Length: 404
Image 1 (cartoon, rainbow, N blue to C red):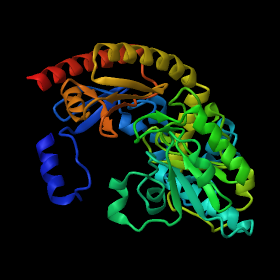
Image 2: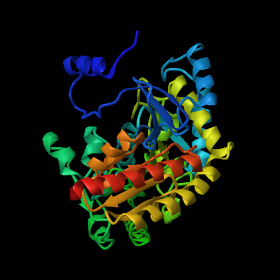
Image 3: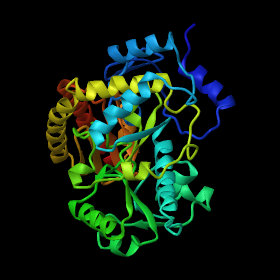
């Protein structure tokens, strides 16, 4: 039976809670960097499920592993052992330098775990007054109560107030603000090394240095939210060390499962020693399917040459985007690293995203005036060239319409 976009829209209108403003397209199949809609039309995917389908769609080794696992054993719970949590955790430890992992189902849950573990660390040390958090203006860490509490945008926060008490936000353009905000009552600072929803904004070296100094001076823990910037998207395993930061905890998600929901809180040994059985848990977290997917992805990342591929693709991507910006004055800035890129526009990005979709290219809008590009880590230079050609036509077309 053929299902049309209109059929899906009508059924969703009756039964789905309307929390999303979906774009008018429904996808039914994917391959590599391409998606196909209900009418069979092809799209070049430069958003990859908001950084999730890291190996592209229908990756053969991931597909084979998931098929085998689904036919063998999906879930047993954390009451028992299975082979894949430890294997995935060992690979994450090698990449991050943090020896322990807690597996959950998403990046938001990973942030939630990091916040809890930071509080638990100080409670164990007897410093029960160290309960406060410092977060960054422009930061986004999720939508659960804890992660939302360290998310800055009032649009997300206001309808659900009051949130977690004791959170101070600092401007990443003002490194000196950290010296005042981070005190001996701060449990942890949480920061995205590259702000994702905030517009693909890397932290400056000056801010990173001030952050390192503030944490060292006060003993405050550092949580690096690498849900979007981590696991190879920049061409590096994690971006915090590139900024000279040594986090005590790292939250990961998105890319980790290649499309299967899985996240993890990565934890230093000193924090891990403060955690006791029963302090945290998850029914689904670390299930066989999710961690098997994570092992496949991490194997591709390290043993399959994916990190080196992203570095090379990132250089090509940046060169093409900077040339594009020289042609179109509406593009004010090109930001990002590797295959995590943002085009800062002078105007709202919505019409450009819509025009791109109409021309068969999927990108998205963030921070109102930013076109965000997050292709699969496996993206090829020919597809980057094609995407930039489409964007060239998009900026020319929308600019003409704006003048008409």
